[in-house]
Image 1 (spheres, rainbow, N blue to C red):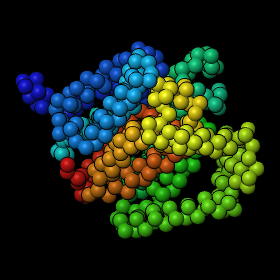
Image 2: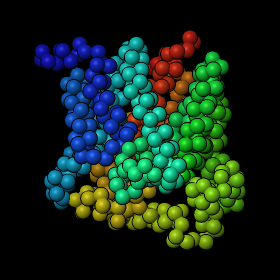
Image 3: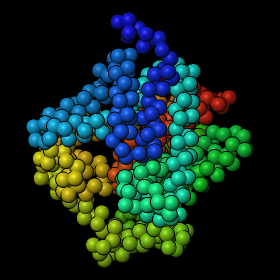
Image 4: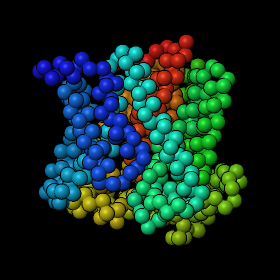
Amino acid sequence: MEAYRKIKKQKPNQILYYTIPYLILILLSIKTFSSRYITFGFVMLFLIVFALAEKKIIIGRKYAYFIWFIMGYGFLGILYGDLNQIVKNICMIILSFAPFFIYDWMFSDSRKDRRLQNSKLIIKVMTPVLIYTVFVTLYYLNSNPYVARNMANYDPSISTNINLPLAIGGGYVLIYGIIFLPPVLLYLAKNICEKLLSKILLLLIALFLLYFIVKSGFATAFIISFAGSLLAVMLTQKQKTFNRVFLTSIILITSIIFLNIEIFSEVISSIIRMLPENSIITIRLNEIIPTLYGNISDSTSFSRRLNNLDMTIDSFLGNPILGIGYKVGFDYSAISLITGQHTEWLDNLSQYGLFLGVPYLLYFATSFRGVIRQFKSTNLEVIMSITILMMILLGFLNPILTSSAFLVTMLYIPCLLIIFSENRENDTGLKEN
């Protein structure tokens, strides 16, 4: 009990120091066993403190979903798989979900001064690392336009012009964290910042990050980030009714565009005309148009994704209750051969079945709803909603449910919004828990 009382007396930002190695090593995407052990050790230390100090959160409904998922995963994995592999998998799952745990700890304290203090610590740690990884990635992209995909995996056989292995810089997972930032920065510049210099700075950073995404060659990432940025510029902070009507109209118009081949094809052609002729994104987008008219070639990335989606759906329909993951001992190499690996929400439902997939998805749904509600009484709810909607949409198009993406959406962006909100003289205040 004495230890428990000491923990309660500590300031939240002091406990957050335990997470700093995790924040840095995950953003750098260093794929070595030693770094993973170090990262996991600090996360577990944080979780122990979290569990002791915030029992009400741990025994709440949201964490009941997570515990259900982890215990079911472990039970089925031990029965049908290799114990060592299952333990490693569970460790990696905990690392992936860690941003949600850190967020819950930070916002368990309803005092605005504590939240602001916590947010500043997170921003101070993550911003220099993000800047470093972006510029390192750009440096490598100049030598090989496909290098970002290789950066996500430690592959010493692929090197840059200075013969360095691409195990640093963020790579694939970094891109799918960065794409959420341009819309947020543009919204802050348009609606929150009052100083002209700050507006210009945020605008330039947002444009630079969009260029970075184009340079990376990820077509889906660019389209989603660009669309989110357009939405952010069009929305206003004062007219909530207008925002709801506008967002509903956008969804309806988008649905009509996707259902009408001619319109969809013209939209893609317009985007292509805005991009460099020989860029990777242009090549990928050019593959989509003939596929829309039924000219499907197995050699294109777009057609392969359609085939992968069929594979995922077939896997789920064949094993709807327990999924297909337990049959191969949750061996991800084996699972990748029988699921598409590009529609991650559906892939995971196919892998886990309804038994594990339902609590898995409910945990995400509860977490996303919570972070949006955190800004309900402020003028930042709309941009947080757009961020979450982007993540949900991307989850149907690409494997983006990674620690790096969660660190940006569940930590960096909420902390950034809190800081900008507090810096406004007419701030309406954050919703109290």
